[in-house]
Amino acid sequence: MSEKEKISKVIGMRVVSIRDIARFAVSLASLGQAPYVIKFRKNDKIIYGLLAVFRDYYKFYGLPLLYYYVAREQEDVKDKHYILVKSNETGEKIEFAEGTRPGWIAIPIMELKIVPKFLDIDVE
Image (cartoon, rainbow, N blue to C red; front, side, top):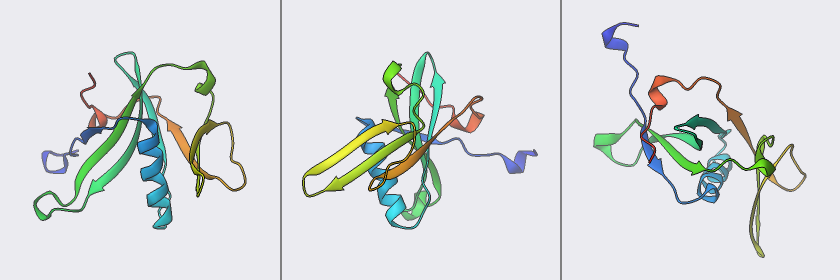
């Protein structure tokens, strides 16, 4: 890759909970996009993230963003490959699951074995 073809590093946007990531993914799905969540390790922490492109301000149009949540290792979600979301008049439900379920929006989790350099974010 030549100097002219450098890939911009993402800007990390840490969110408060995995619910924020799931809610954002559902909003993307409602727009016809096929969202997915990436999962990787950094500094002995588990990172769940959603890649996006900033489109709301002309100077930063096209800026690559990674909305991410820092999690602790939890055995109950270790082998779960989906985040399931159900929202109705009774509220919002978000669960990790091994597969999909009727009536729920399923967001696949893609676990990265090797983290590309453009995802090198600072994690406290």
